[in-house]
Length: 290
Length: 101
Image 1: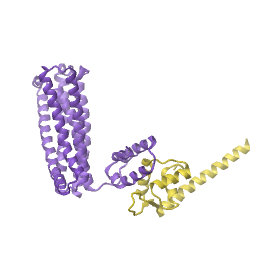
Image 2: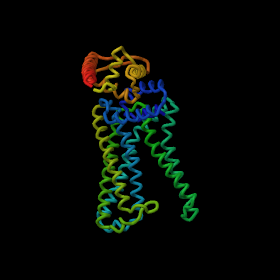
Image 3: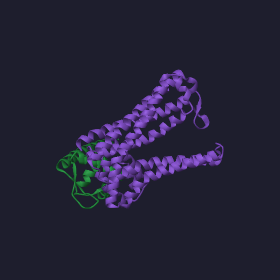
Image 4: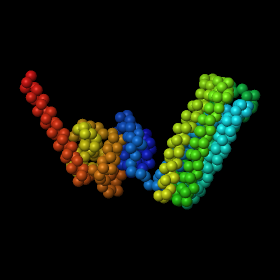
């Protein structure tokens, strides 16, 4: 447990002090005070980073950070898609709504393409490494994202089959399957972030792979920013020209209205876009030094 | 700097000779009664190393020892002297106040 907390420290810190701290933890009895001290130390290490890490470490960090931001961004984006799925006629109320919605769709497609472009050279490098070394742990890590996505798709398929069989009345079984879908989505999202991050640390990534992956991830970050801005425009359009749509209830139990839902999604998108953009800029700078 | 400042305590411990993380925590606990947590210890070690006040020694062991550098010894002496001056002055004033009462 305490050694796992070391993974909260920044990568340059772990590379420099990780082994020593692990050795120290092996020699000291576990305590809540030590756990809290490690948490505080990890936060402090992020706030006061060590001297700049090696360019390859920074490039790996960029890929992992933007990927993590994009996965959470997708959750907010799915929320937006769900919120606006029944508002096809709304987009005819004002051109701004239609244009911003189109921007979001186009940017989402480009982001997905850029993500595939970024993943391709890393996937090739990791498969080549696994083929050469036959490391069982590496093979398991490579298999994790497809397995996680498969489990999520399977759970959604089950839910759809259930709803079709019960004439779209969810019932207790339907809610249970919906919970299973949410669980698979959360676990799958985490696996799709953690597995590539762990793989990148285990293998030697050629410069040519970084030269393709880092700019592609920067493009993902750019698309995230475009989507966030287009969502902001969409929100303004809703408030100005379609207040009746904005006032409608939304989400489970209709707890919040459409305007508040989109505002929350927008806040999450803007925050993640900013983090991804900073990380992408750092990664692009590190490419020059690679 | 406070007398319980982790940086001063670590340097004071290393004044005796090179030590690794666990040996430093044990020594600091003995000399000052302060339990340094792992995050605090390595946070202070990183800052001291950055400032060139301590340096790591080469080893094959997971437990890397550190030693006080020349500038580190000078800074430690300055800190301890200042603390000693404050302590002596404070004690003298306390004694004088007790005599008056």
